[in-house]
Image (cartoon, rainbow, N blue to C red; front, side):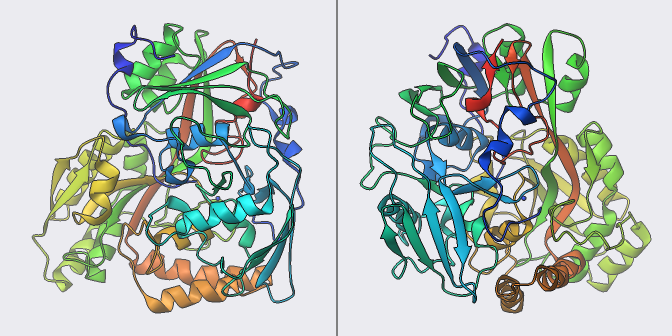
Length: 526
């Protein structure tokens, strides 16, 4: 339960990353089994799993307004709690391919506009079987036009009125158009399956995940117990508790003091200070978090492509990675998904060019431009990145005024307001990044990038069965974003987790937001 001895854990949690929410090679049909995520992939030769014990995990949270409704999940803490209680039909492997979960298999028709999904045998925590009716109910709830659930945009390709159950464990999904990467829809961030008729999510949530509900205090803690009848095998742990720790220092101190065994999202400086020192273990999840500045393309000054291009050239990416991330990451090239399937790695690496930036600003009539850059201590490196970029911009004659935002409301505040802000994202497929953030009707379109011809290219990619031809369409889309998009993507950060020496079975090669991230049913205490 919540521990009053942890003063750092009493503060309201802050909003973590968007996206999920949150990726690489995308399967056209389910072929890789979930056992690939089992203990054979665990790191460091941790030995045979041991059953029992309670693990306490410290995450940044969302304050008193937190909920266990899995369809409202938007923060890392939300996602970790949701995957403990619930399952999706699919999830993303370490390579960002869609891996079967509650869906045992899937198969498209020849035209890619109907997909047959077969469910595996699984039960909810109250003993009811997971059925096709539960899946259709869950998806229809997410797609409710009166709601703004995170996975709503991802499920948009499905015609839920025409889709139907073909048996207790069979579903025919009828799509509005050919969709080559439909398994990504099944794996979408927040697309969890709930029982038909479920409503009391914060007091009596019932899922089919590896842990069952015990207690929940919004903004403080949530406790779960092992579900012995979990379809993939019961967790090793008896109990799992999530505690909210707003500040990174509170999470670290709780870990060092033995008050928690798992601390999510540590700073690179903290990792360097403790790595290899013997007190705690540091786990680095490489290439997990896109780091960017978000320019709103629908309003001055960033409605002028020349200004956006100038800002691309103002950024010294190496200085930003070294300064804001303490070197714990790699430089970006203004495109999401470095190293993932379809990533346009053939485009020239963009370098700082202040002379060209000044010329572009002059052409736009913005030689002495002043802009406000919204940032917050909501995420590691945000305030540092803002300060570094402010100094870089000054060399091009641009005045950047840094404005600090609230930790608790930052992500909501910057989605529609302001003109320039610090931004980051967890891992997801490039296709999902486009559908969630770069289409005219995307619900988290922070750059306000709205172009019907770009939307049409996305639809073309999704109706292209041949992977090589599909990659060519994604290449065209990325070249346009590289030239005139609103995301100035300067780096990709390691995701850093700290654990006690007793915690075993943590997968090191799973980016944040993938199947094996926060996979507490496969973790054990030595």
